[in-house]
Length: 616
Image (cartoon, rainbow, N blue to C red; front, side, top):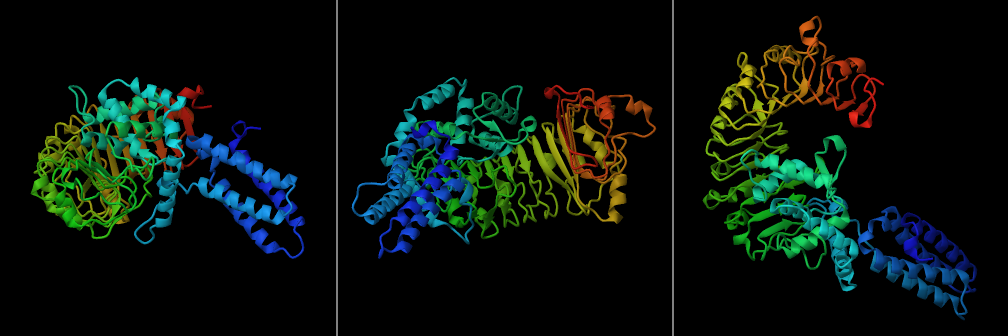
């Protein structure tokens, strides 16, 4: 029976079983004087190799190489069957040694190391050179066998290329091609992906949409056409994955378009060489070659876990526009580390001040301060410092970054304060991680943000030492362009909790706010401002963590009579929160999706598209 007609998941277990029977028969036929231990050890090595391949789900993952590999396993199966059924050879031990060597050779040829994008994560303390060598060796062998050519000339690949050719517009095609550099099985976070597109110039603002909104639209189109798949909750997809066949197709197209280089010694992985496309990718321990450094446009960290650069390296990148050194992966546990507290950033000099547009250090550990010269890059448009957990100090004045549209300093919990001059960033559209600390360390206050006429997305972190001006949060209503707002409260001492709770009573919001995200709210009773009469246009309401017990306004009939226009409601980690589903259904008549996780009662994931009533 042809192998391709069988279930790939069942083939190896059956082969292992038959190999075991063959071993038993071979041992039973060993002549006196032959070394039984040698035979057993050789069989064990073969079984261990096959078992490792079975444990790693080898066969289900080799669809790209299926025809070549299937022929190899079919031949392997025939050889084992031949031994099991018996042969007219005079010396069965020699035959056994020969078949053992042939099986070992076949396994050596077919052995696929755990894919580097997932399993070969390392730091400077442990760099698996042997794994990398094996992966490159495999790529070269597959190339020599003509696997790559067979893949690109297959009918399935032709159909996939047709779907690419039907995409309308250069923007959409370029953004789709950008997925080619991500390792197989990667989970790609939407936000840094869109930031990258903006920095590359793949997408730009239109007359009625910001560049980020254009990116959201393109991400949605690719999702709708199933060219990328949502990861996790399909109703709130903020990450995606890529099918291996589609990734393979994109690599061929991106290479032909000279958008990225791909290593000739390592199929399907981007290259650090940038002699043609002016884009270099950091892959494992490889650094961009000196050839063409001065003309580099983009440096993208694909999967380097440990960054060790000399200061002179950055100074040589005289034409660089985009440095994506930080995390693009969806998982916040993905680790990136620097060895010099980020001192290599001091290599940024005056030659970069007019061309540098994008810098991402997201999720990099070890950076304690940002050099002041970074705040002198007047051309900078996106600065992503999210989750730099060791970051303590920013330069004192940020007012030179007049072209900055996106600033993300959220989840930098050791940060001491904000720089002055934020109110002068007239182009700012997104500000995440605005810290309210003590008065000394917060020269920029919420009132300054009212000057930012383009600000659409804002997240505020109220620190443990927060001191707020009287009714400071009432100035939020003056940020008329604001559409998305997140407010997070730090875990505070009982002494400060009462003060913060009191100050948190006086909030006012801009009239066109569409999304409100509250995290760690230190109030047990719902505050007066959290009501549908004041938040008239809210479509998304997220409340995560804190002490809130209910969404009911006790004794306020005028408030409870007014209904929410919320379509997506997420309640998470509210151990005191009690929700009665009929009441939720009454208060939120426009609800399309409800998520209630680790609250007082059992978890609920409800979507109107399922066709059931919420209260049932």
